[in-house]
Image (cartoon, rainbow, N blue to C red; front, side, top):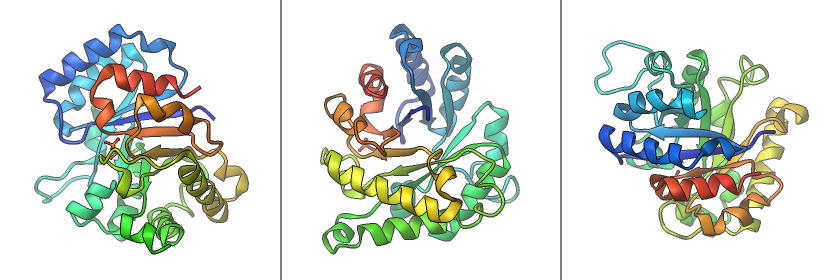
Length: 252
Ligand code: PGA
């Protein structure tokens, strides 16, 4: 399976800064990288990504979509419209969406389905909070988020369409506290087993499972060596082209 390195810029970089970023990115000669690259930018930076993507061989997409394609939904983002801009991926159910914007498992399931219906590859994010980890609930929480998030697509799309999972322990996001390769590896293996129950063993091995949470050039190689880690979702360190390049370069 081809590994994936995804950047989550969050609410950072204006369109002008995004263009400067991609110029700097191109200068690093990203064609040397062997993984797939996806940039999740703020919605207003998608046109900048679209200008550079064909030449540089990367994909891009929004950090969130709505589950309706159009209508009276002030402030929301249409999966169909971003697809028309050239986006091919969508980040769904990031923990910041869940905790800061009240996204529920049920909404996230509809968004996964909407992404697929619009021909976007969804990356479904799952992960436990510190309190959940400390009370021994990690596997239970991750399994619930996975089952709920994929519920609406298992019958219809899951066998035929591409999608990915990102495991991001909430306590490791933006905190500098990275999960140890063993901690991450254990949950990734568990996610693979769960996926096997949902879509069958063979298909489960074709679904990339990304790790996210304080991934940096210094820890990327060790994490990448875990057998069930198929790529990264990178927040803070993706804002510097050189750091993001170094992380992507660890995925071989
Ligand atoms: P971080 O964020 O790399 O800054 O920890 C990861 C994410 O939220 O996707």
